[in-house]
Image (cartoon, rainbow, N blue to C red; front, side, top):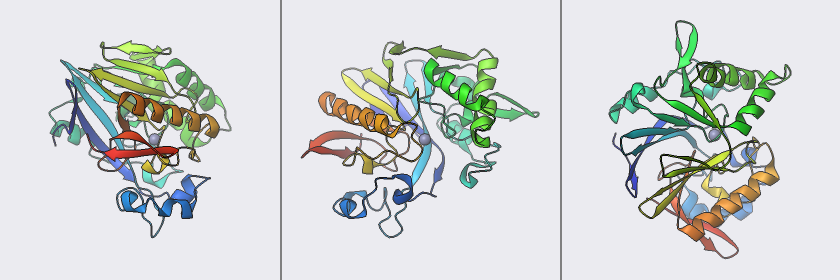
Amino acid sequence: MTMIGKLGGVEIGRILDSSLLGFTAQKWFPEFDREAVRAHEHWLCPNHYDAECGRIPMPVHSWLLRIGKYNVLIDTCMGNDKNRAEFGEMHMLTNRYLERMAAIGLKPEDIHFVLCTHLHVDHVGWNTRLDNGRWVPTFPNARYVMARREYEAARDEAADPNAPGFIRNTFADSVHPVVEAGKSDLVDDDHQLLDCLTLRSAPGHSPGHIRIELKSQGQIGVFAGDMLHSPIQIPFWQWSSIVCWNQAMASSARRELLEYCCAENALLIPGHFEAPHVGRIREAGNTFAIDFGW
Ligand SMILES: [Zn+2]
């Protein structure tokens, strides 16, 4: 595997953990409208939507950025060996994520920054790995950068004894250990990193979700995390998912993101799009469309 894209002077790679195949659009989007989607099947199918069974495949991948001598990892997927009994597709995984990272020439020691768009179960898993029964930071030389607001919300949610097991487990095995090890930087709005990255507040999917803007040589890319889960949400930007913390806020954040991408000709780089994974946004009638590719 090699780096798959370039934006200005920054090379970008994608590291797959595994793909979630268990959700239909009907189940995932409460506002899903089967008839309205028919007019979009010609570009959604087969990669992004299965018109027969309604399934929307969602790969879970990290983005890897080479910025000068620095290696920056955005989101860390699901991780191995983690107790996620409520989710068969995420439970006690034995994925070859680190081998895929090695295939692009990087060891865990080579990662300088890990940025978390948010702290949900499928975005923090490889923050840690199991070592003699203890969860230790997978990337020993990295600073783990998280939004303070997101961290505090995740910590409080996990402290609720009535919270689902996977919520408590995710915080305990994938977030708390890096903070306890002194590896985390909890940052406020509009945090800047390495002169070309800006972390912008974009709450809705989760209380402290951020989007990460990359600017290099006049080019702009936006790592959007879970502000969208599927390209269906480009024409139907109003549709938030069942796992969004605040669906109305998630919709308005998504619309603002799509408007920004149009205005700046920015490359949209989400967390869960199937190939070709990225694209540029344009206005289409009273909504939006995507031109896939780098
Ligand atoms: Zn996600």
